[in-house]
Length: 381
Image (cartoon, rainbow, N blue to C red; front, top):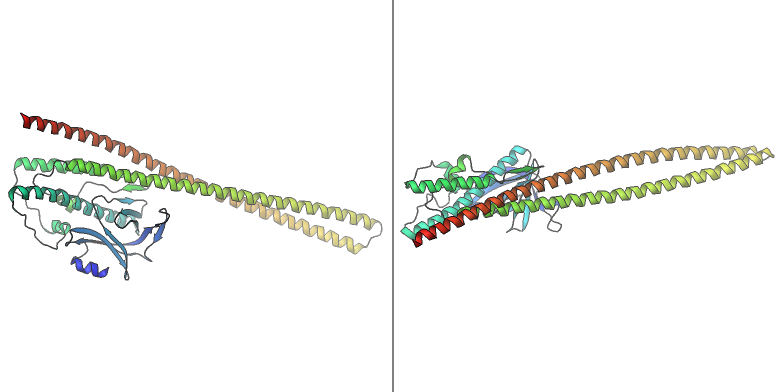
């Protein structure tokens, strides 16, 4: 894995420290620690394949080797923890950071890289159309330089484009920003990464490419719709998980109730034995009145006193156990109920966002269909 890093011939685009986790491949519900401590997690650009990767190595073991695609989504599940799914690796990676600020930096870098990949795809499609018409190739500044680093290191030079082309690029940029700003949602600790480009990557997110394909906004809206559906599915899975936790707590409550009933039955048995001992004492006193030995009577009295002391101690212990178990059950039930409510609220929020995006997609498709019909009419006339 280390050799793989060196062969890239690139310095890391971004590096941070985090604990690495993998989803349990059997249950798909619990996390397994992939690193013994916080390790370096870096973004790399593979110039030979034109790919961005997230790589982390602990010793000689590669704990993360994930190729970033335009469809990936990084989900913030708590203040210091986030996750993303890698379909190629057939796993879900989780990162635990020391602070929320470090998690925010990683989310921003993940979004920058993903937007750069989307820009490369749109730009590549536009360049293929331009090259097919003119037969000219666009020169590349460096064969091994990352487009992300090149966009930061070199100042933007205004290309010689026509006013109509500038208008088209601006409209595409505004549509791209609107599509990405929809998916920023925070519900009960769940936040889906999706923001409009800002800072040094603004020029990378919308490069001045000549005449992008007409269906690029439609594909972008469909991608956002699919991504929000995935976030909704994850929220539903979390809600189901908390429902299972609540059922487990109810089962534990029943088990503790059975134990309490058993303890109550033991107390009843001790009371029955005490009653028998008292009857024996009464008989002993009766015998003592008739001239029985005084030592035997005294021993029985001591035995009765000892049993009464033991019974009082057992009653006190039973009361303490009952009180502690009841408080623990109430606390666990309240915690599980609150977590379930948060998960359900997050699911409702995601559902509303998806519905809004679905309506927007329908309007965009209707507008595209109208434009298509108008163009056909204009061409026929």
